Image (cartoon, rainbow, N blue to C red; front, side, top):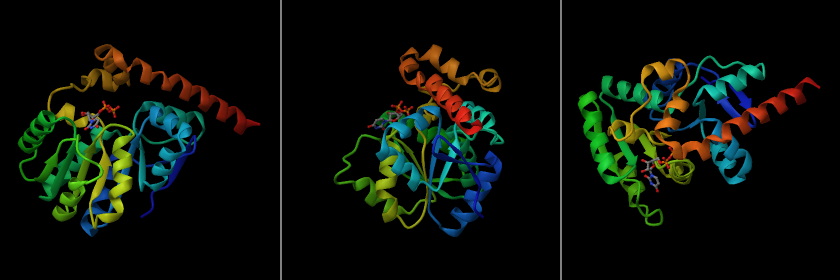
Amino acid sequence: MKIPTVEILNVPFINTTLNDFTNQLLNEHTLKSKKAFIVTANPEIVMYANQDSDYMKILNKADYITPDGIGIVKAANKLGKPLPERVTGFDLMKDLLEKADEYQMSVYLLGAKHEVIEEAKVNIEKTYPNLKIVGYHDGYFDWETNKVADEIDALKPDFVFVALGVPRQEKWISQNIDRFQKGVFMGVGGCFDVWAGAVKRAPEFWQKVHLEWFYRLINQPSRLGRMMAIPKFMMKINKQKAKERR
Ligand code: UDP
């Protein structure tokens, strides 16, 4: 089943809920051994893609782009093309791990620092004892020899979570996806750091009031530069809305 999309500043976002999307991935991809390339995109990524045509080409190669954050949902509302809810990288990864646990599927973890990935692996295995982590590798490897891709190719995992940061993770997936026979591939940014306990996700209160970004900012002030993309994104949305009204 094709999921309808909503275009926001040239990026097509899937118009569905987290739950329906997880089921779509399971039924249309994992259970049919059909590959998928997923990008979870926030306003910063949309702005980046609009400035970097190579990255936009990579996004065009993705099978699904999800609205990662309230900024995208608000922009969609503003443009009169509402999306039902945000589908964040962390929530989607968690739901897919739950499915992998339920169906005893295989998982490969790629990215983050060596000690982080080891700790993340242990914590994921503790939480989901029935899934199989068939392999893992830190995110500091040689892209030229790309032994990591050879390993994934041989293991044929059901899910491959790639935490190399933006834009590296999408670049790596798009460069390699054609050689793999199966697998759901998804960039997960700093999620392994959260699984390892190195970075805490915002407490539920902050998430519920949609101020997770603010919680992260006060805990990691170095994010300020990156976050300046958000007001610029909102300005662009306002401009697009004004253009569409004319
Ligand atoms: N990372 C990696 N290889 C690299 C650069 C970064 O594995 O060459 C990892 C990094 O250790 C961290 C994750 O990518 O675990 C996310 O990094 P960053 O915070 O830069 O990404 P963002 O949150 O901006 O996507």
